[in-house]
Length: 255
Image 1 (cartoon, rainbow, N blue to C red):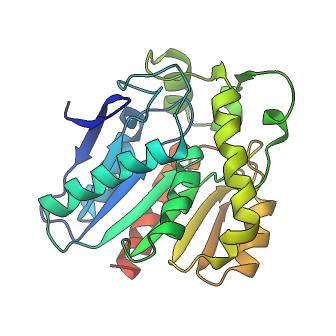
Image 2: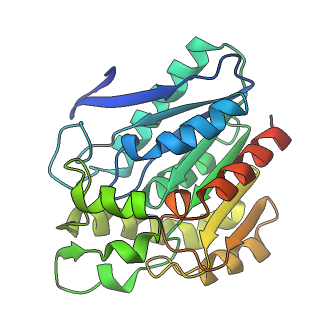
């Protein structure tokens, strides 16, 4: 696999390439995941003429680091910067869409706030934009029930049996970076200027959708799309085909 050089080590990435891409999505995954579990999204985007670039963040997948420790938000953002440059080099002038899931959505929102001219649009899913109670207590272990994440049998199997995926780790580094984000979002997220689609499961037990509903009412460029009965890992839920179709439609409207 190709890799991105960074001071924390070599971060491995995947590129699902469309034959004649009309847009490129730059994707950051969430806690416990890696790029390999997003092949269905990659194929769906490719079928619609959209490239998908995704990186195994630090502490995840094939990239180095302590299990579950992404490093700082700036480290993840630097990986997305490098992916963006690769996409630009592969197809100069192509419209770029920044996308992230869960923790990846937090980094993506930082990037949309800091670089509003770089991306045509943004996509976030399972975004924990307000404090998560489980990360605020004194217990530093995070152990997720796979059924909080999805009802999709393939994905649950991956979370349980894939040696590159996991549902438990020390939560201190994650909580530290999320706390930084929560401190910023209250004041700055309403300034979001880039057209952004928020995709969320109605039954998400990790990042309740109510916070996104409130922000979507306040922020004109932010559009919320809820999926009834779906849980946190909405991109790999039983409705993953419908979710991919919504992403394709949104990219088409903004490219």
